[in-house]
Image (cartoon, rainbow, N blue to C red):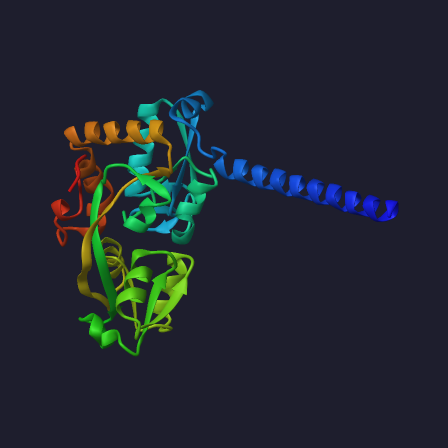
Length: 285
């Protein structure tokens, strides 16, 4: 009888220790999940550097030139933000699907990579005031020009993973076969090689690409809602978000974004695009 009681007691002790161990692990996991991954405005200033996620292959918005230097409209903004913060800027190349992840993991302080504001994205990142307006566009070969999304049914549409085009066509046109790529360069090469019938992304981007690539035309210039593009920070990083909003308002008063358009976008678009249809000067729309 004593042996039975001893076994029961030992079993209870082991059970309690196991439960405590499980609770401790759960607590550690919860604490890890609650850990602040972002740097506050003061921490960024103290470090002397802000880390900004941008595209490296999306000319004329964010790209690396032949000298290995980042250029484009988003870089125009990033350089000015760093200057007004009094810090250096470090650009980190991101792909469309990684933009939110880079903020969630603290890899960057800020995303300036043609990040369209959506309700789904608002759940995982915080957006500042917008600096651009955008809709979707579809570019295709002149010899088989796509002028209506209905013409894509049963055909192959190239998209970049994690973009609004990916989401839009998945939801609204399930009969369209999507061919997805991580990088914009890969997507455009697929279109050039004839691996797909058309390519869809921001209309501002496909319009610029078609101008540089004879034989291709943006048959659908505006599709879906008119959305906005804005800087994004890690969820809960209120100090950086508040500073960004005030900064964007201030830049708007000096017509900064129209100036950026003239310097970085107009050389590509020429007179084919009205700046006021793209640029937002420090205000909600």
